[in-house]
Image 1: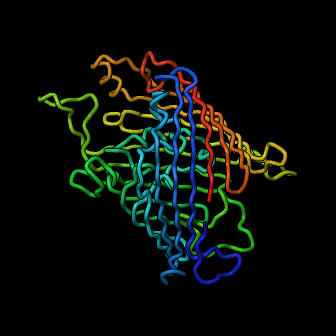
Image 2 (image 1 turned 90 degrees about the vertical axis):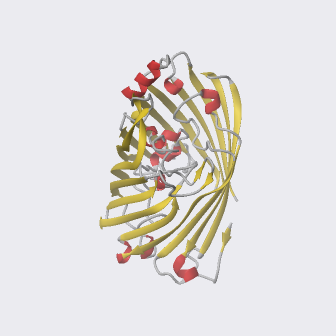
Image 3 (image 1 turned 180 degrees about the vertical axis):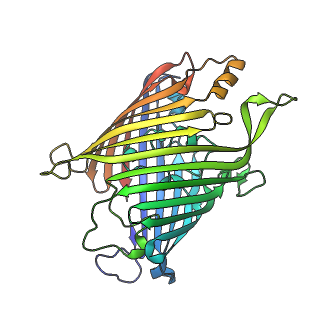
Amino acid sequence: MMVAGSAAAQDSPPPVTSNVIYDANSVSDLSGGVRRGSAYQGMLRWQTSVDGERVLGWPDSSAFFNVMATHQAGPSTLTGDAQGVSNMAAPPGVRLEEAWIQKNFLDGRLSVLAGRYDLNSEFYHLNTASLFFNSSFGIGAEFAQSGQGGPSIFPATSVGTRIAVKPAPNVVLRAAILDGVPVDRSGGSTAFRGGDGLLLVYEMAWLSRPEPAASVQDHHLRIGRNAGLAPDQGKLAVGGWYYTAQFGELNAFDASGQPRQQRGSSGAYLVAERSLYQSSTQPQKVISGFVQLGAADSRVNRFSGYFGAGLTATGLVPGRASDELGLAVAIARNGSAYLRSQQIVGVANQRAESTVELTYLSQVSPRLSLQPSLQYVMHPNTVTGVGNALTLQLRAEVAF
């Protein structure tokens, strides 16, 4: 669904664009895990993009709003896994996921964004890994499960600001300052409450893109969210994060027996993706790979390390140029402090939870896609005695 203002050039997008998308996901635990069974998830998204120059007269600016309605519980109640076999898992209800405005400067070399913002849309992000359902392929478990309620990512985002700079054509420097706790929390929705602290995130990315087409997009779209750029053929990014609030240590206690408080929580990551092969006679046939590495402070974070890697192949089936096949593995590793804390209470844990995912995306039409995903979870939630889980999911996405 598109909403247009005054007539624009045929090749120019309307000043206001709205899209309504519904995702339906069925998941079955075929063996192992906590219990056998099936579950259903549904998510309705209403996304609106605004060209600030054409609507409000603000040059080089844009705005974005994303409202979500989700229903039914996630499948981890079946598998019992820690990483999340479905990246659609969210509490039921209607909420504002993102609402921000962005202003670009210096002919598109500097971008400033402010508002409610999903940092994983730019930080720790790989296009190749987005094919997969497991949550860790969006952002590693060591960062996704940090902080008080998690960082500013789906399904619980925070308010803050992000600055991005392009010192060279294929280099992007990003930094974000966000509330250390998501807006939606127990007790209601609020921001920057006492004790929240701040979440500081930074990243440096090196990008490899094909040469731009003859008709270049408007200069104010060359950086930042919704930039009109060709997809990356390769990316290497290193980043880090730091919470300024206090956190209880997992295996250190004060004289009263309470967890000893530590100022700050931090981590770092490296992600990379690359187009490994492209047919010279059939350019739609592409094989790409990705790698994710992450580490976090094990004194206050359960997962001290994460490793993810995968391969995707596009256009392998004749006449199915947009279909994708993918195989990937995600490994979340418990920290030593967490393992010791579990031993104290008599719970035996494995060192890591590992998941292998095989998936195939079928683009049935421009508005409909179908995607099955098979995941094998080894040591769900790292709890000894829980059998390895085999899950099958089928997702349909409809754009109205």
